[in-house]
Amino acid sequence: MGKKIRGFFRSFVFRLVILLIAIGIIPSAILFTILLRTYQSRSVDLKTIEILNQAKILANTISTEEYLQNPKNPGIDSQLTLLSKIYDGRVIVVNQACRVVKDTYDMDRYKTIISQEVMRSFRGEEVTNYDAENRYIELTVPVAGMADGADEPGVSGVLMVSVSTDTDALNYSYLERTGIMILLTTLMVLVLLSVIIAIEMAAPFKRLSGAIHDFHAGMENEVLSVKGHTEVQELTERINSMTASMKVLNDSRQEFVSNVSHELKTPLTSMKVLADSLNGQESVPIELYQEFMADITVEIDRENKIISDLLSLVRMDKAAADLSVTSVNINDLVEIILKRCKPIADKQGVELVFESFRPVTAEIDEVKMSLAISNLVENAIKYNRTEGGYVHVSLNADYQFFYVTVEDNGIGIPEESQDHIFERFYRADKSHSREIGGTGLGLAITRSAILMHRGAIKLHSVEGEGTTFTIRVPLNYIES
Image (tube, rainbow, N blue to C red; front, side):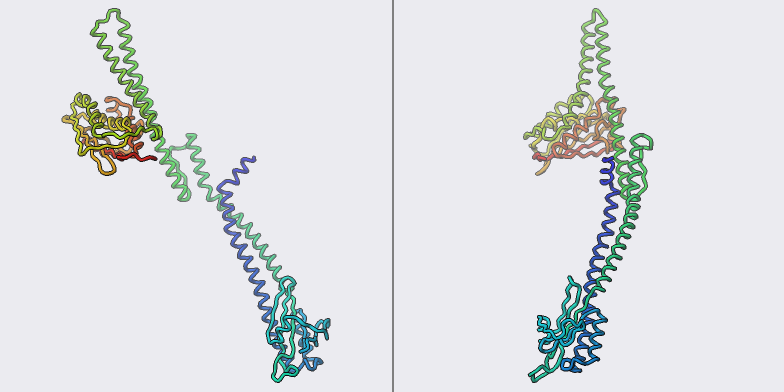
């Protein structure tokens, strides 16, 4: 159960749901927070401006009516009381002596008020403050008039207004609750939509997984067909391509096992028949004995060739660090190889020609490179059964690489086989291969040896006209 839960949390569907929810809800939450704070700040600013305008109008009226000299003006009193009631606040009028002549709350009348804001207004400033913690706006406005002992008009008093913002706070709380409800509703809708979208997006992968399972179980055709978005179709195509390659490799291996079994069994059978023939006769003529022993030797050589190819392929599978790199004269190496192959060419009636354009010395593993070149030359000879057949081997080099080209005018390689000719266990012409001999490992061994030297091999062949192999190997071995 725990494993299934952990698997669900690591699943593509779960992660996609979380991603879609995050993409939808996080920007909404940030935007909602910004809007709330903007609303709160804007609400306070607008209310402050509105009250300040009303206070300035009232201060002008107080100055005009000389209310500070005669605080018994019912009209001014009613205006002060009205302003206090409308904005749910408190209005205080202070005279030049900093004494309160009017307090709409009747709490500080005739008391003296000396504060920083009042002093600033006596200097002609309009002062506004907002106390966010206690939620009220406080402002002071100078009242113009002739101060005692002054020759020119100045400030004769100060109008103080304190207004509560509790109503705005209630509106803010209401908007906040409404916004949270909208966010929660949005979250639920997002969860539902995200689950639907995630399941829909993951469906092709599930179908692909099921198709692979069925394919593995042998219940479906060998080609997967899953409809879905582009990525799934590309993945399906790649799986089909990989499966096709694996099938070709598997078929080649099965054929190789069959061929090798036959090749290994045939010499053993021949040797057993020959040995039984010798053992079944009491007086075997020396000539017959020598003939049979010569045949047994040929069969042993065939057996040894097959086993040597298999061992060579295994050795090629090891890391390039197993290379025994030394400085080798490539001209001498190729000449030794051709000298060893000349008896085979003479027996086949094939002319073997070597052309060297310049002396070449390179850092290589002599054994593995000799095996690679030998395979190419031997193949060119064995598959060349045309009259006037030839194998032309050339050696050249530049400042970075040396090049060996093996060209023949033999039977050639079919075009459809040229992409697979270097694959292990692959043989282009199975009838000729069985007739001529070999295991289908030679070119695979050659390619592995060349790649271990950080080189490359290229093929050009026309069926019925001949084949050319060109290998390119660095003059200096490149460490991996």
